[in-house]
Image 1 (cartoon, rainbow, N blue to C red):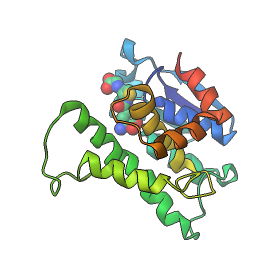
Image 2 (cartoon, protein in one colour):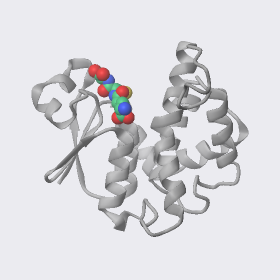
Image 3 (tube, rainbow, N blue to C red):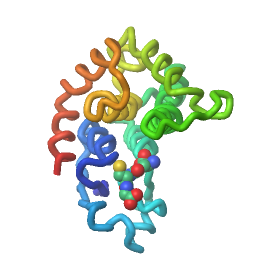
Image 4 (cartoon, protein in one colour):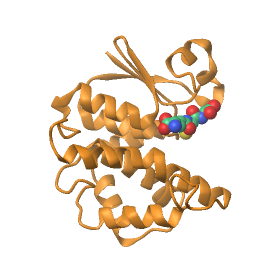
Length: 198
Ligand SMILES: N[C@@H](CCC(=O)N[C@@H](CS)C(=O)NCC(=O)O)C(=O)O
């Protein structure tokens, strides 16, 4: 059985949402970060970063929320959470899957810390550029790839949910509001939100 190591009110939410979307059976292993459970030697063997989430599936083990989403979508194609490797939509799927940890997360941290970095040096350019690009990509909808919901929506949607809807660190825009309304209306999102509340 797949084991998902998670902690309430954390980035584990992304993977809880993904697992709920997948319909696969899984066991949730509470790893409460307020108790230091993520720093035990046993847990560090699963995720050497000592952070949640992490996942074990048979002999496979990994950390990093976006990687976990990608792993499940590819390992279990019956979940229909990723375009096939030969599908041309796979290219944009990968771009948006990586965009969240690579650009959205650092942009949010930059907004939070107010650290100025030249746009040519910062891998994410600037926070304004990141959210302009995302807004343009989400305008048409309903999902980041168009008609097809995918694991990239879980990763992007969870990031926007955190930064725009919950913590209001990033000012909302009409395309974000509409996209978040579609994400939060999904039964799997709602189940994950209840679980993640602890
Ligand atoms: N890049 C990681 C970040 C994970 C992360 O920051 N987890 C936080 C909770 S939101 C954590 O485990 N913090 C506890 C700690 O660092 O001790 C991912 O996307 O999974």
